[in-house]
Length: 231
Image 1 (cartoon, rainbow, N blue to C red):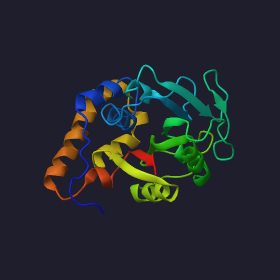
Image 2 (image 1 turned 30 degrees about the vertical axis):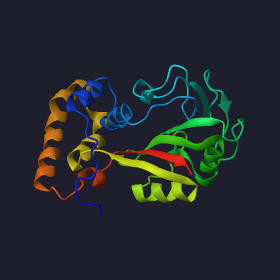
Image 3 (image 1 turned 90 degrees about the vertical axis):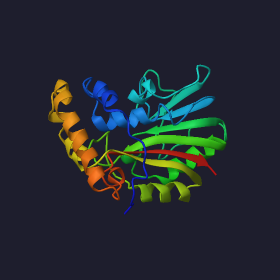
Image 4 (image 1 turned 90 degrees about the horizontal axis):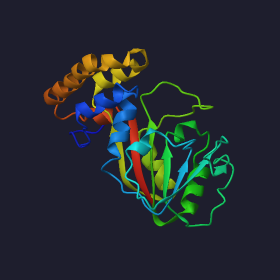
């Protein structure tokens, strides 16, 4: 168990509220807000599992206007460049031709992980970066399947085993009250977040004061965000 409040990502409540009332879950909102200040993407970017038009994270990722963004997905959609199963097939791009690979909310839907990570490593240039997220305290959501949840230790082991060095594996959350609130998110009418979310937010804040040696974010993560580099 981690001790001490070592994870510093703590977005302002008002920013989380703005997204929550638009219908985004609190966990997904906090996950997205993290990326505004933690990366700067440029060059050739491959989004694996991005789907049509990309996910909500695109509104927050700092991406250079000159970046070349390609997408690979198992489902054929209008804006998908490569339609394939990353657990079984190779992306038709040369070795070391990609600067950044995005893997947002994909790992939990894969039955195998070594083969996709090996292919990602092949595609990245030396020192190239893989970024993404994976849920932890989230309901089962098949797309078309939902296989796993990883802890931070499991993610670190998985990435290192497949030839990546760890820059950051960040638990996204605040404490047990927000973790419980997230499970009820689908039942809450969006405008009511203005009423309930500040209460939950303050309760976790109070708990962190009463239990300063407990890393509540690491104990009750909603998601993990990861930044890893090709070794």
